[in-house]
Length: 303
Image (cartoon, rainbow, N blue to C red):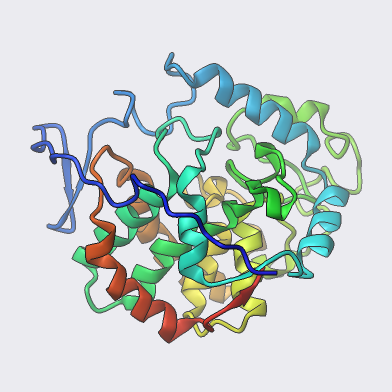
């Protein structure tokens, strides 16, 4: 099955870029970290009384109750078949143009805006790392799981911070209190530090809560992308904030994970802080990203 992507009349428009405030932080002498998100609050402030705060917490309550070890195994088995759709990477980018992530307290723009903001910010500071530019563009493409062609999964099964299942839920996970209603919370097989895993087993042996991260990783891997190992790691774990912001679960990592984590922490600054009201001229940058897609991916992918 091939999806025909409709033309979006507003795709590619720009708005005037505002000057940087004295509170903005310059990263790597290139990218500017804004002081506040689109709503005027600190980034990832889940307690700020923004217009989306209540909805975000309700989202995480549902997410934390339902993301169990058995649920993740079922979803990986179903979506790992990659039998839903056949389309290119760029077609998938366009498909996301009407998606808004309800779990994100910092952003209310269509996802395509965030993808290009991230990729272009990385490109300015790391001009020779083209694999990282492409990773910035595609890291959230798994959010197509919200689309009817993919079963129109609920937001709690697609977006939000990710975390391991099959072992104890670390207290650094946002809205941790809601895990008390998760069936695995009191299951002695799953609620210890290691659970079903062994120390240093490697994150590739660990099941993560199901969502767009793991799905896009499966798409890239099974379609035999030549993207760097660090790129695949970023795609799979960019929402794993308990690890790359709080240092939790490092007892499960191996040496390769340690090396890839360095790139993930670099990437995270762009993923998080590039969320703004500045629009990207899509047609201007499109040829460059199409060349990268051709370099690292087949023309059509199974999804």
